Image (cartoon, rainbow, N blue to C red; front, side):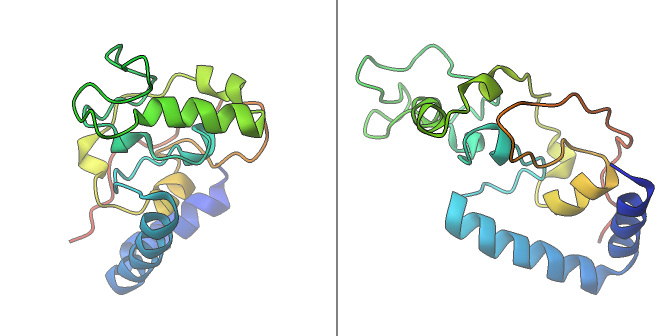
Length: 147
């Protein structure tokens, strides 16, 4: 991200009330629309706008291999495998190539933090609307120190 976006993130993180307002807005939107699980490392735009953390094993890089032939999950047979859904949606959106992007494992320190501010701070990949993925260097590694 840019120096300006990093400054915006730092400002939000220095003001707990502002940070909590941003995080609340984000949670209301993303949990309602995308069934977000609050990992703080959102990859919705890379996974056909479907939260991969809904997988019971929380696998971020494709199915576990236990997907049943009918597309159902091996852990919860009554549910469709989230990666089956992601692939189906990606095919409809013409975004299957984006699924080949490797995502770093979830950093549990970022759980329940604002993915938007984490993105602005350079901790996570930026939101991408295009059909092709870009290579991005992340600038920060540590989670925000919001209490």
